[in-house]
Image 1 (cartoon, helix red, strand yellow):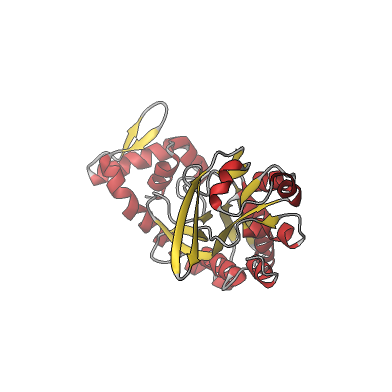
Image 2: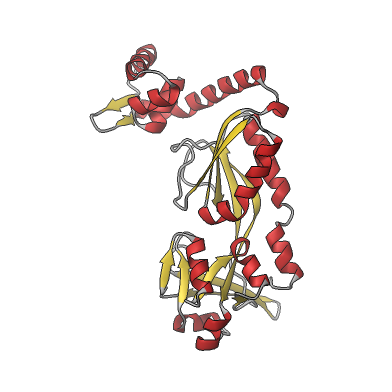
Length: 307
C-alpha cells in the first residue's frame, strides 16, 4: 500500500522506488501483487507515465489514510513529541518564506535539533500531496486537491502603496477609478484577472467597487513588484507582511487608505489524516503561536496608524 501511494503521487515506478529506497522491479512486483489481491487493475502503465485507473482513484484516499496511520503507529513507538526527529518538507510563497517564515523555522529547529527541515520557496501553486510536502503555506484556502486540511496562521492584508517620488511625479489618486490613469504593479497570484476590488463604509452603508486596471508590470512574485515600487515604477498591490518596514521608514506611502482591499489569510495545508504527525502538528502550533492573534508586521503598522 505504501508503494502504491508513492507510485500514485510520483506517477512513476522508478521515482517511487528511489523515494522508498527499493528497486523498480520490486515496486512493479508489489503493485502487481496488490492488484492480484484486489482483483482489479489500479494503474495504467505507459512508456511515458503511470496513471490511475478508476479503481485506483477509488482506492487511493483510503489507502493513503491507512499508510499514514501505520506511519503514525511506528512514530508513536519510536519517538515522543518532545523528541521530534527526521525530515520535514515545507513549501511557502517566496516573499513570505524569505521575509518571515525562514526566521521562524530557524528558531523552530533550535528547539528540535533532531529535525531536518527543508524549506522550499516557490510562488507556483504546488499541490503538497503530489510534490511530497508535509506542510504547505499558502495565501488563501484549500486548492482542488484531495486529502488536505487547512489551518489559518495569520491575516494576509493587501495594501496599495507607491514611492514618494512616483506620487510627486504622477500625483496621488483619490478614488479607485483614477487608477486607470496610473502605472499599476499587479501580483498575478493575488487576484483573479487584472482587477482590484475595493470596499468602504460610507454613511453607514457599504460601498463596493471593482477597477479593471492595465498593469504596467505583472509578476507572480510579490518581492519583484515591491522592489519595482521602491524604484518609483508605479502603484503596487502589496501585502503588509512585505511592505511594513518600507512603509514605516517612509520609502513607500499608502494609497487610497480610506478604501479596504479584500482580506485574505495565510494558511497551513497538511495531510487530512485522522491524526496529524507530531512534527507537523508541533510546527503548525509553533507558527500559530508566532502569528496570532495579530502578526508583528500588522501590529507595527497599526501602532503607526498606517492601517
